[in-house]
Length: 101
Image (tube, rainbow, N blue to C red; front, top):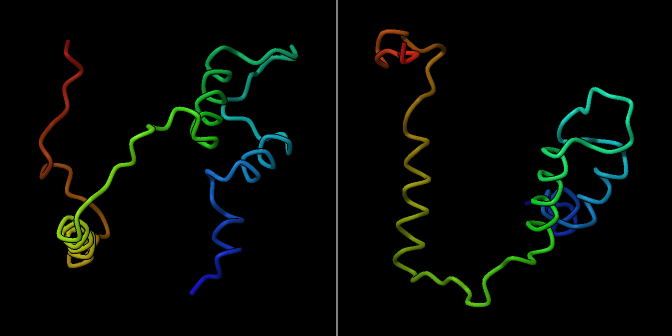
């Protein structure tokens, strides 16, 4: 089992991890320009990442679930492992995609 410290170190929602990623020069979107101001879409992405990491928009009312709901949720997740992932998917099996033209 992974120790608590290691899980915490790799948690993408941990503010310390997010700060490390941001300070290392990693960017959500490459600006493609030499200007110092990031594009609006990058600023929005970084703002949402900060809101999630800090929990500043979290509800004051904690969400709870019953033990039955937790058991059913866990069982549903475990059941996903009963199906083998195919090496490739048949193109015709999934239907078709239209561009709307």
